[in-house]
Amino acid sequence: VLKPCKIKRFPFSSSAIGQDSSTGIPPYLCAVLQKLHIRNYILMDELEVHFKPGFTILTGETGAGKSILLGALSLLLGERADAKVVLNTERKCVLEAHFNDISTTAVPALLEAEEIECGEELILRREISGQGKSRVFINDTPSTLQVLQRLAVHLVDMHRQQDTPLLREGGQQLRLLDEVGQCSPVLQGEVHEPHVLAFEKTANNFHIVMSF
Image (cartoon, rainbow, N blue to C red; front, side, top):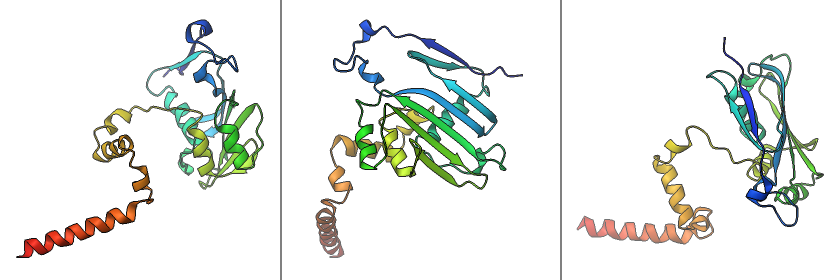
């Protein structure tokens, strides 16, 4: 029988890490995950985890449930879902995350742009039916997966086990090279057409020369 995963917490020393002069909050704690609620998800009928201030570690044997918690959080950050994650297809799966200390992030501005009420706490909720249909709620307001994904980058920086092998993939290397070279205007099409036309002209000239 596998033991369930354990949660270990290590308190911060604010004097050691410094604080934001305007808020008194350490700069990288501006958005803090306070609570994760899971219902009818994969192997979990219902679970609620409260995260206290400090450094938290989830430990446990293989199969103890660590990846399930991260999977639930990933869905709350905008990953696509299907009916496979629903434990009992006669009931909907509900995932909910509570974040606080969001005032010094870009979250309030994003919520205002989407006409979503913003308070001191941010509540994200995903509801997934037994047929795989998904609904998104932000602060109890219906929203979209795209908005959820835009918020996610300001809330959680998630690193997975397979992130490092991605560095060996050619496509990922090209994306990193484009970022370093500041090629986003070209990739987004702002100056894409002139470059394509110049390439086609050069290719045609090369073909003519090689045909002789």
